[in-house]
Image 1 (cartoon, chains in turn blue, purple):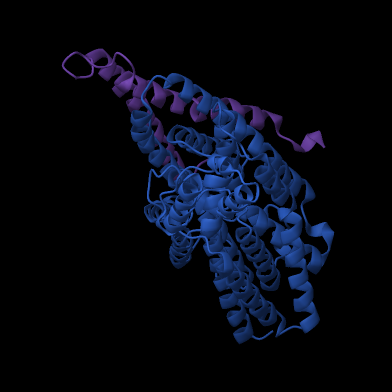
Image 2 (cartoon, helix red, strand yellow; image 1 turned 60 degrees about the horizontal axis):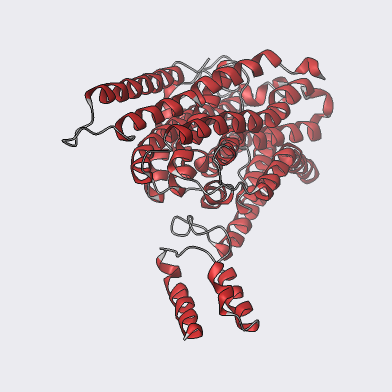
Length: 421
Length: 78
């Protein structure tokens, strides 16, 4: 390959790494802010804005973790630009697919999976550090939710017990502050940990193409662009994931939200201290479930949780498959054009998922709607009419405050009245 | 496969995680209860001095922990 081709390829890789960083912020904004949004401690836009600025600050706070995430798992000597690109494609596609289904899954697992798959397809299985993959990635994915559920349920239980004879209104008012504080800490830790993964990848690419020497530290423009990409992603907000975390798993109160976010922050920081990095997503999800377990009368939707666990288990293999397919396409197309073809495929695939997502938009306006589908109300009316029994209509959901739903609700009420009369 | 698993690290995470992850919310709850629980208000509507001091002590420990955590993140987290 000639020099010009390498530098174009390098630009592609850097752009793709920044795109991954963007999906990472986008996918993970719910980890920190879903609880604050669900309990209305913060307005949705304010919450993602706060989280974005803290992610930005967090990215500048520390640069010591660098590239370990990808290089610990594969033999870094074999990594080429084509392989890195294919791995990133695997990570991005899996992030977008899980976002489409509103499943909070680990962005780092998607990245590791994509890179592992690309390395296997390019060089075979011997260059993968299987022991590292098991002990650093797969096993922690099983441990994280268990630890988080335990800590958060005990925390919630204690909090609820201690404050049981404080007025609900006072509790809400005070715990909202605790909630915002603890959620901010989670955002900060996320910015520090996750932005460095993309910085590490870009550094790896720069070293692999000989632009910077092998012992170079992270150049400032890399730090700045990664921090901005992640903050932008966080601000755009993965509303589908936020909705699942905040409304889908448990109906949250401020006390639960505060206990859950503190548990997340504590476990993330403590686990990285003991060199056993747990995924922010897994910890945050586990903590939210734990806050439902520890609260008497709160209902955890285990079916939603089960779907999520399933997605976590297949994250690495699926991202690996996409990464491997990307390498095979690169090989099939041939040397100069291969990387451009998969980059084009990535753009096409992302656009497709984005357009599909527009059919059922979830955004800052409807993120807090009731989890059970609004169509239920209609079916209840229909059922009660069919059964000639207006009493059947009484059991349904609490009144909504959302403007968009107001008309529907009024109609419902009118209907009810006329039936009664 | 148990050779791969660092049980010590996991035990440490659970113990220290519980200490901070469940302890700090409980401390916050104690602070809230001291300020707003039954019997917190004097006849003139003020919070009793002792309760106020207890609450501020709880919140101070929390603020210290959070500050410590931020410095910890800034110093590299290891």
